[in-house]
Structure formats: structure tokens, C-alpha cells
Image (cartoon, rainbow, N blue to C red; front, top):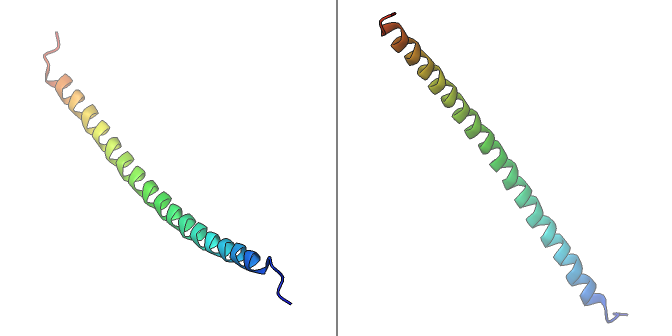
Length: 69
């Protein structure tokens, strides 16, 4: 015996399955994005550190070239 709300339940179940599949893909993409963001942040941080070190070295070199007086 087919009850009148069976098609509705089937559509709701199908919708939940599709929603779960989409949610899994989004979560996977967010994990990849977070990994790439961490990699970029680390590389930029390293380059900023090198730039600060070079700037400090130039300041020391300029200070040594100035006549003491």
C-alpha cells in the first residue's frame, strides 16, 4: 500500500543525501584552502623576516660608514 506522503519522504531523503555530498565537497575544499593559506603565510613570513634582517644589516653598515664625531 503506497501512502500519499511516500514521494515526499523520498524527496526529503534524496535532498539530504545531496546536501551531505555537497557539504563533504565544501569541507574538503576548505581543508585544501586552509593548507594553501598556511603555506603562503609561512613563506611570506619568512620573506618578511629576511627583509627585516637585510634592513637591519644596512642600518649597521650605514652607521659604520658615518664618521664618528
